[in-house]
Image (cartoon, rainbow, N blue to C red; front, side, top):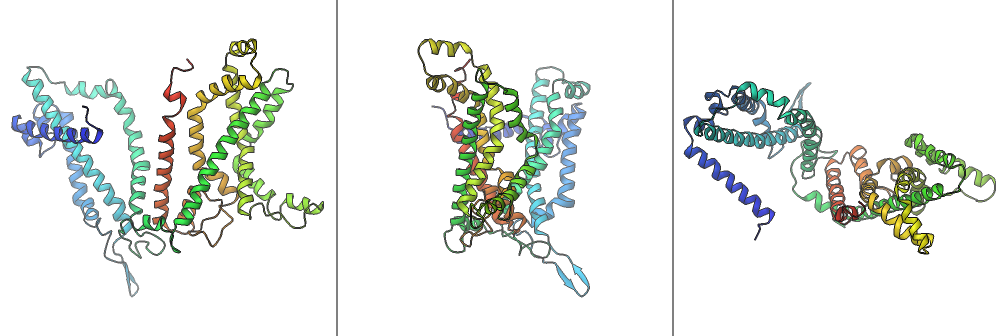
Length: 458
């Protein structure tokens, strides 16, 4: 019986500890001393470059901890206790909760990294001892250095990108997760006002349906986010496919002209188009102006002020923007469907609807399944369309946290951060966006025909 993943992970950790103990018990004095002085064994065995790298990493880590890291790590549990004060004309700066959280987190990550380097150092000593016991020669320093341009060239190429991913992606994400468990907001901003840990209080507030809670607003915004993503994805998908089939139909004249007209919406920058449409349908915009002038209405239509109408308008505008993209993708796919399939279907007496249902649609869905899922996930976080058209409005006293009826989770998060400076709840919403996105993606991905049956159309 195969162990599950948690059991396998625990077994792997236990095996690693066993190897560490066995290496220390069976190793020579150089290996044992390497447990304290990184790279000591390789240096003594002539592996100068390897030993120097291990030793340098240890020295730099110790210098960082003594000079910098320990001070932040020591205060990480409280995020600071000394408040900045103004004594007379002089400002006496105290702790900075933001820096304590940031550099304390970085210090913890570096400690974990050093433990991994320590483990690699032990494994290197064990490997070198095995080579020497087999009466073989260790690799030369020159060959080791040259390997970074040959056998280990992948490590050389990926070193800088991995560092960038850690600094600009991993660390900010971990920082945001930590902020979700603090009271960091407009009234708790360092260095003037410290913030501290509050546990799961923010998550309780998000799911609380009391008057001061965010539960009702979160549920409203979440449902609209899912509904918006569904319509924005599938309406554009099927209408774009329909337009592509019409344009590709034999006998249709001026095909290039129709494609050019549709592609014009892509050529114009999206933010220009959206802002123009927003002004057109405003209460004092050109649409209401002409409708009033022609006597078709007595008062301006509240395109952006009525919650239901504003949502319909957003979906409609997104159709105008999204159809050309899907039309271009579907055009290329339709041209790749073998014409023999359609000829055989016609000979068997199949109608155009039957051919679409049993040939065109299965092929298109098979090829574009991952794209469709990606589009849905992208629409869950579609900031531009919502914010440029309505800024999340209309708003209501029923919704807390400055949320509006057309806000998505991502636009609500933005307003929480920029407008309300409510960083703690913005961080919680950010985590919920990740959870919703991950659950949908992982649930649907394995159901796609192109994933379940990769050989289906080959």
